[in-house]
Length: 441
Image 1 (cartoon, rainbow, N blue to C red):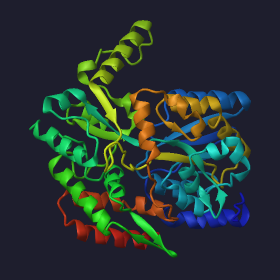
Image 2: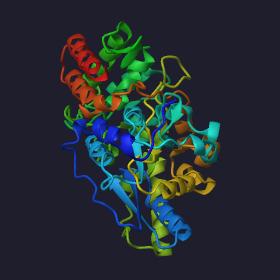
Image 3: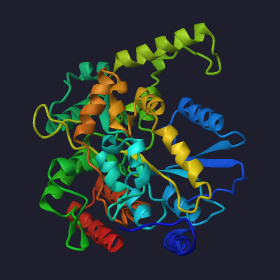
Image 4: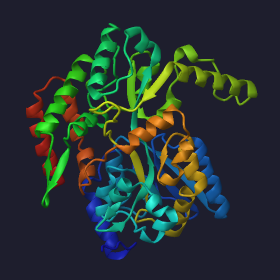
């Protein structure tokens, strides 16, 4: 069983392992003061309410200490982590990391062992796939923060106008997306918002057809996009790119609700917490975002109700009626960097994050909490039902030690963009498989 210590030889090993790609990708963090504990959170997934709770609770328990929460952009995160985690001066004390990136940094010795707090943080109630992604050689180094399995948001009025019903199979979904686009000939309208680099959503077709991104054969990882199952799925994906979307071929999956809000799409797919980002023009009450008066709150409630009256949601259906597709399980792990000089304070902050109060707040904000015991706080409305249905069959990327390098090199973004642009799928898949194998092995 591998052990990671917080200094000496282990620190040197971490620095050498992480320094391979430590250039570019954003600015590294600056060194913190002796009274600061620094937490890295990625993107806007963690609402401000939860950030305020962490800061107030931690500082109340640690007199004289300040919790500094630093938001990192998901784009370019891997090289930024490689830079920061290899330096005592630059490392955060607690860090959110994408679940697909977790194995690489875990095996590299970037994180402190957490086996001793496993039970304190939730034990067997922790999301098992995320625990696996944070485990190396049987030892735990990163724990689940939240999961956000993707569901499909749609405009009920556009479905009705096009005579389209909510699909119950993946084939019905493809047919519906094409019909919705044909019903709206606007040159920038998409039946399904599906940018060319969006492998996060595209991989659901691969998984549904029994394919995969890469598989382990003995001691080697082998690219699996060229398999017959994956090829059949990718032909369906290319058909969607050609006939069901006018999203840019060179864009990624970031903020798909923007096109939806702008009237440029009948459907988009995202984790169900995206419901809070839907803001249709016809529902806008012109509320000043800084206005906290009861009148403003009432108008905001009306605005939200209007958005959700027009918008529906359903899990991406599977191959058979009544099933859900094995969508990509988005989400994050959270870990204590080996280089942190505030190991105990970081552990205390981790315990706050896994408290009943905070885990419940995650669920109430539409995120599936790392401790599944509190998932009931998601509620029982259509959004919660869609989230849980999607999560039951969600799938992670291969738990390969070098998977973060595949993401850092944007191999899948480039491959799906080629598929979207009309490339020969078999040839593009063979090249992507070759690149993944070089990287993973």
